[in-house]
Structures are given as C-alpha cells and as structure tokens.
Length: 123
Ligand SMILES: CC(C)(COP(=O)(O)OP(=O)(O)OC[C@H]1O[C@@H](n2cnc3c(N)ncnc32)[C@H](O)[C@@H]1OP(=O)(O)O)[C@@H](O)C(=O)NCCC(=O)NCCS
Image (cartoon, rainbow, N blue to C red; front, side):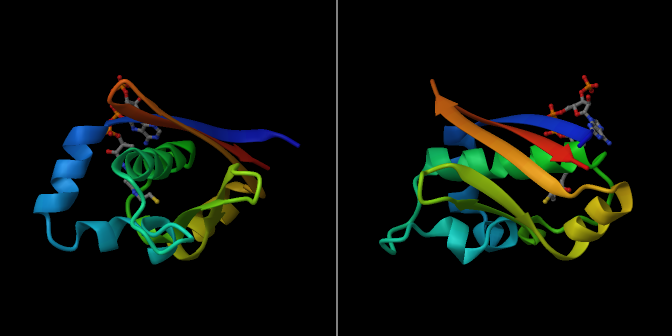
C-alpha cells in the first residue's frame, strides 16, 4: 500500500447552490443522477451536493489536476453505513491507472456555510 495522491477542497454552500440554480445544465454536467437524487427520489440538499462537488475537485487535485477529466467520470456513492465512497470511470479511471491508483478514500463535511472534502488515492 502506498499513498499516490491527496486532495482537499472547500465550497461555499450558498454560492454553489446559487450557481446550480442559475446555470442551466450545470447539475447534469457535474453530477450523475445517483448523486443528485436521494434513494427516496427527492433531490439531495445543497450542502451534500456542495460536498460532492468538493470531493470531485479534491479527487482532481489528488491526480495532479490534469486537463480533460470529466466530472461525471467520478461518482460519490454511499455505503449502507452512510460512509461515502468514490467510484471512477472513463477519463478519471484512465488517469488513475496511469498513476497506479488502486483504491480511493473520501471524507465529506459541511457546516457553518461551507462544504469540504478530502480524498486520498492509494496505490
Ligand atoms: C487546479 C484546481 C483543482 C484548483 O482548484 P480551485 O478550486 O480553483 O482552487 P483551490 O483554492 O481549491 O485550490 C488551489 C490550490 O490547488 C493546488 N493546485 C494547483 N494546481 C494543482 C495541480 N495540478 N494538482 C494538485 N493541486 C493543484 C494549489 O496548491 C493551489 O493552491 P496555491 O495556489 O496556494 O498553491 C482546479 O482549477 C481544477 O483544475 N479543477 C479540476 C476540475 C476537474 O478536473 N474536474 C473533474 C474532476 S472529476
């Protein structure tokens, strides 16, 4: 086991939510339906969405933020326990494979108007 990369990001929840509301197509460009919707079918709340955005930025940093990564090639999903996990495909999986990343760790937080995420890439 070795650490290949680490990334961190923060997002102001109200500003992120306002951008999502006023920018047509932004939610679909950034997120998969499985991220936008709760298991109940209701829309996920702004703090959790901002944290998922921060996770994708943190993941990009862990990979050295190369050009050409697609937002929807990274998915934050949730274990039955509530723990978030990352799944990567396409452009993100290709870059991860280049660097020898075999598994991902992600942690999310939101409080005091700010959402944040830390990502660790393990080889
Ligand atoms: C590089 C990038 C991550 C910077 O993020 P940002 O939100 O603009 O800025 P932040 O304040 O969060 O982060 C800034 C820090 O990122 C770090 N950073 C810059 N380039 C980086 C790189 N190539 N790799 C890792 N970290 C980098 C720097 O340390 C910088 O701080 P500094 O200027 O004080 O040194 C961003 O511009 C970017 O490319 N995002 C990735 C988009 C993407 O690929 N999305 C799909 C992912 S699934």
